[in-house]
Length: 143
Ligand SMILES: [Zn+2]
Image (cartoon, rainbow, N blue to C red):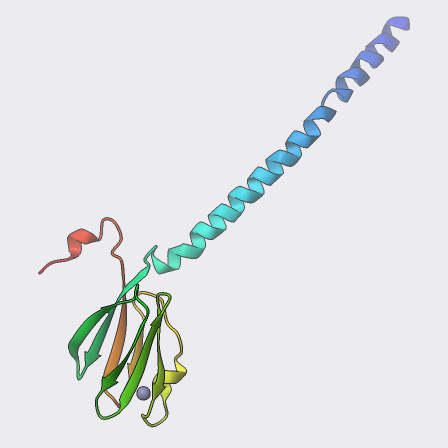
């Protein structure tokens, strides 16, 4: 009988040992949480294909008027049948003012996603946002 008791005490002693592990489990949970957040941040950047807006192409009547950098804050006016006042600020671009009917271009607001464009139909203007090409996609560029 005495031997059984000792055995139980030993088992209980054995159970008491994992307790110092509890903080480690907490750490593990924290690590997993941080990892999950990291994956979340990673996924959040995926839709943009890891591209950052870099260049703005200005088209009028379907022809490329000029290319401007989205990395420099600037304001300019595109002259046509109407006037589009374009503003570049912090890598984003918007037509901030226009005398075109409807002012749909102004209403489209600030854009910064590569591949997106702001269009002013009455002025036949298109502002196309280009991003930095991703690694591996450079080969596809020709001319
Ligand atoms: Zn417009």
